[in-house]
Length: 314
Ligand code: NAP
Image 1 (cartoon, helix red, strand yellow):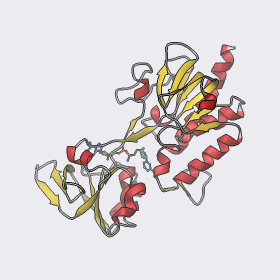
Image 2 (cartoon, protein in one colour; image 1 turned 135 degrees about the horizontal axis):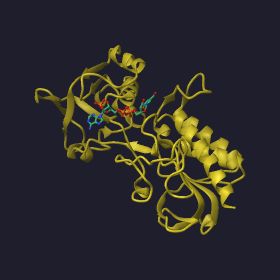
Image 3 (spheres, helix red, strand yellow; image 1 turned 30 degrees about the horizontal axis):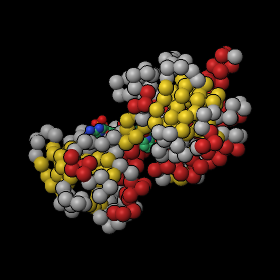
Image 4 (spheres, helix red, strand yellow; image 1 turned 90 degrees about the vertical axis):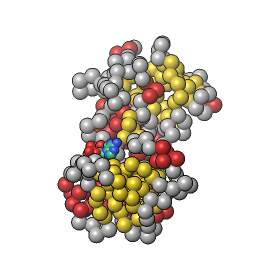
């Protein structure tokens, strides 16, 4: 990072999922040599997924990490400068904005594109946090293969839970979905795959009340939300959380306007935030659609908005 310390860039993009890398592609093609600070998970959430079948242009589907490599290669081909670094502080008081990368390197940005995405949510049980990485995880793609011929549970009733449960059947002998209501919110096609799968069972109206085990997962306790009755599944060795996401926007709290969940508010149909020269795109500002293709779309918008805004400053 030393080579960029103290430099001022027209556009700095924070985050490198579909939104950030599409913003990078458009800003690079506008000759603005954007700097992309890739963050703690370069490529974003799609690097922890397997097959992406709903991104246009890949008729046979594509692996998430491969797709994000394609995004990055396309942006760098036109001059985007992608760096493995995380923004740890920003001085919003004067422009160009001063960014601190990994607590040490300073760079300055005339315009800033926030594409920091979102991260998996946890239930917050003491036993869940204690056994994180020891059988409790939020990423089936990363950890599924460790549970060959074992019984695992998936918590949640959305598309992620369906996708994770279906994926886990490749390895596990049995997958039990625990959902707090008596119907899924997932899309019909993904529900159908789950409900028809011989290895998948569903516990309706259930919440995970305890993960059992001292050093590794040795079972779970499930509470029925109607009767309060507790059931123990003593042979479970893996717990996969799929209960949604939280936007990665803590860095901007108190500065950028946000809703109560932390999603950044943008003006009208644009990516303008309440701060001059700061634009937001992707899952950091979208709790509605949260798709790779919509994130890429808003990334494109952010680059165009930033380019026009920079033009107006001259
Ligand atoms: P989601 O749609 O928000 O679903 C979260 C699920 O977790 C819901 O069923 C919710 O229950 C449950 N939940 C939330 N908090 C809980 C808690 N504290 N305890 C127990 N259960 C809890 O999140 P998602 O499944 O991650 O999907 C997010 C977005 O990505 C969606 O738009 C989805 O369509 C999209 N997505 C698409 C694909 C694909 O097309 N391939 C794959 C994955 C995700 P309730 O239903 O009761 O609220």
